[in-house]
Length: 493
Image 1: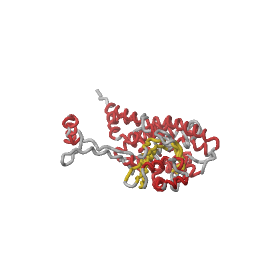
Image 2 (image 1 turned 30 degrees about the vertical axis):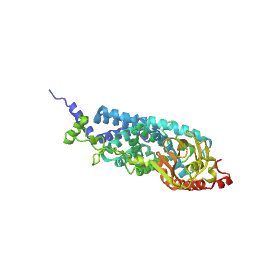
Image 3 (image 1 turned 60 degrees about the horizontal axis):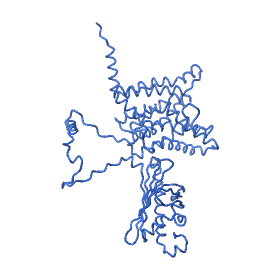
């Protein structure tokens, strides 16, 4: 009987895929995906038939990106790998600031880039319609039809695997040109020279965009949020291909705004790679020991016998045998880059009660305060204040923080945020410490959020000097003789 050879060929193919998952993905993705994506181009050039582009792009992403990513993952990592990929693709529960990045920061960055390049739009009454139909609707359509599937493949499969082997920056550098080449069918309508120019521009901006996407994926573990970031950028310009253009074409009629979101996303990516010092949120544990090695057997033995685990595994000891508290878990560098602390202190020759009286007399702020130039509200826990803040050399802004601590003569603290949680969240506090001869006042503020790296320099340049100026003015106010205050009529009765 002649032996059947089909299973052997199948096993050899599976072996190749397991040994070369990235190459196998690309060998499927580009031939299949590009054949589908180029159908409208071929139809126009050869048959003079104008086919809609968007349906073919959607099909190319599903069959040429998402499907090979899932199939190769199944072959290489089994069902557990597919489940893990799906969990990342559908993960919704992430801190709100990441949705703020996708839904607010990316569109605002694109709009700011457009204003910088083209000037303010003459939007008139179309702004609301442009936001709803151009941004919100196009974001949802793009995410559901295209960008989610794209990012499951590019970020969830390809960039993640390259990152595990080569690190986050090299993974983005390798993924960027491939990601740009996937869009070749959208560039050929500009002629050969124009198409090459467009592809080079897309490639140059795609690499920092992959920095941004890799960082979001590493920090959130959610490919859903990564897809939203992608969809938000597209929704500001060309949109999803269904239901009209995105936000900026509706505000800048007749202007070439297509490259704007690429420039904005690239700028955000460069900020991220600089702020995280190239780590992009990647905190990888050390490689596990080989199961058959002596180290691996020792680790397995300790895991199997938790009662015999040495006491030093739970509590450090000093040389004399005294227990020491566990070492604090270090904050990842990228987390530090998303926070900023400012403080300034001053010694005042007045009692804490007098300093507290000046600090809580909000109505008198315009008379002496160079930083908080106007203030309204009731000083009580949970109440909102309306504050007009004037940084040194900056533009005044009005904030409405909520008081979270009101301890008479000891501490006053409020919290606020910029637009939505997670962009820039701030906690501002005043601490009064009695000392010989008076009071030490410490004014401090902690900023956290995805926009903090962008505003950190301006905080050092404008806000901290404003702290110092306010402290000195408060010192002069609190140290005034009682009759001087009564004569000016500015004091609190």
